[in-house]
Length: 540
Image (cartoon, rainbow, N blue to C red):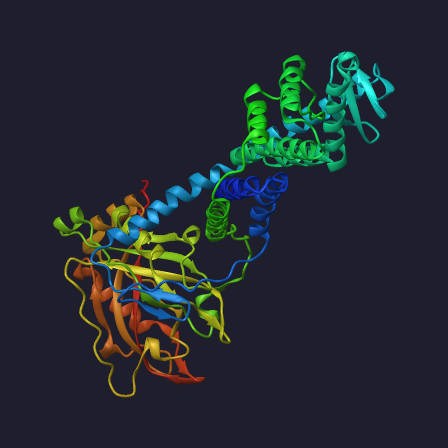
């Protein structure tokens, strides 16, 4: 997500800036160039976050909490004490995730607007500089070809190459002072400092929201001038005369165009810092200070390398979703939170059911956007069932050994009196989870709604819900239910039991199979009882 990546990039930029600041202190102790340190920090602040998006990270194995088990790629934890913890986490993720995602578009628009504004400012500065240059004239001053401007300079500008610009008043200055001006600007031109500053300006234009980068560019400007001052001093300039020149010319200089960096138009405090750097005596304990500064810079760079980069947003992929009866291995539940019975319904002695449909992906997780209610007897039951399904882990379904996404239906039964435990199947009868193909319903006669429950059926029809009876039976190898094995597991009213039992016995199934051989299988399944339609009015 763009918001998280921008925070990550800003944190890296700050780390690189602090590292450059520490290493700059070490370079100053030995009078070494400093501008390259800030140039590298700016380049790293721009390139490293981009590389983090493009270069895949090293996969990190999942953390397994105490009491949990790692099954293939899934972490199966111990049963939670309550359902609140996992469901609460899921809800928090569902709230924060869309909120952060909703910021992506506004942030991109602001980013584009700020970059466009800076680009237009850069273009305007170039156009203004060329327009003003039409009134300048070329001259040779003290053996150096310069451009003489009415109110700009001393500076170095790019006009068909790097050119030195002097103001008209500089022609009447003392020869020694004018010679120092030219020496300084020639040093800038030889080191191609204007191109370095222009590159830093372009970096700001690309990521204008990175506040630490603005500070780095400002430090680069100071380092460029400080390095140039050092070269001027090594050329034999007098420190006192050069410092006086910086202050006097800085007081007379006007604002300069963006593309005309100059040594003499900075704030007075920055000029004083440059003068202090030129006149400061050699510090003591240079080796110790250098070691401390270098160590600090190394630690900050290490912190930048250890900063966890945001995971790239998953690329939406349209993977095929298989039906439950079309895979060789159906998804199997590994762990789910505790199913909490709604207190208000439990106190009233109300039971019910929920049937959800969801897609279990190739990692064994439920796609929250795919959860759909097929039938539900009460909204409170439905809310609980949805939270449990989203927090449940499965062994993914497989087709010929390959994990695939499977659409399944998951029933939930809420009964005040728990249903009877599944008995041990008789000899020669298999459980559902021990066969390769489970029995599949082929046909079932319509259920007869008992006349004694017409009033109850009318209330069901008005509320738009259906009723379910949960049944257990043995489907033999011919695809018929053994009448003696039919058992009612959960029912709201005994009046439905006889109709459900009769429907099961009269149904036909595709028998369960093991390795292609039909075998008897004990199965549990719900039977949906549709409320009777309202009788049509009779006309006489």
